Image (cartoon, rainbow, N blue to C red; front, side):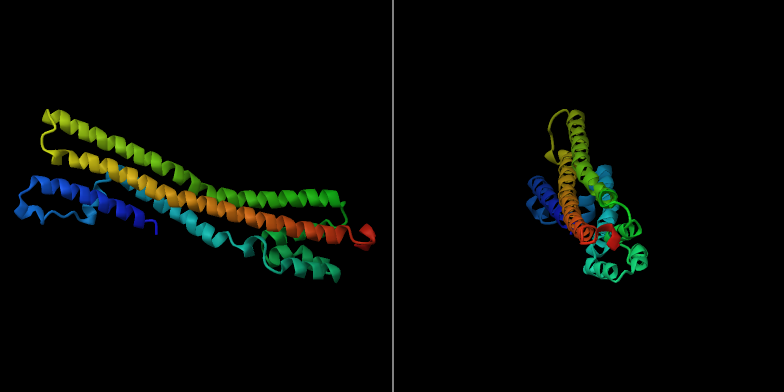
Length: 244
């Protein structure tokens, strides 16, 4: 998915270079001009290698978030109803071990509430909110590298463009004039390819970063709602603390 746009950019650059070469070679040999994918990749130079390596490294975080940021790890379906049933039946020991038997953010919060059911609601609610905020912050941090990569890729592309233009001007300086336009193709191609790669990699990484951030926010809202409903049902029910 991430290579589709960069490969399209390589194709555009190859077409431009082929057109330049065709303008300078005899018509009989113009049809023989062809650039392989390896030649197109080489145009990116060292900066292009760094860009691909950085994107490959970022793919690790993408897969980690795809498998790690799931509802069952934060707000499992039906867990609130099961916890309410255990509380009603007085099975507090099972509630206290819920964070171990069904590991998730909500289960850990429920276990904390069950262990501190004799404490004032204000204290339990405050600490439970802190537990939720801490676990959500961990999920935000795990997606943060995607935002860093999305920021670095265009900068690397700009750096590659500068290197390519430097090579182009050095060629002009050594030739003493513009001379043969094909002598400038390498530097200009490097400038275009690295800039295109930077944008092509940055766009999906930035989109995925905000996607995972939005999903974390959505799960956070659900999590806060579930915890609030449990606290209200358990601590504000008729009979007060004596009922517990």
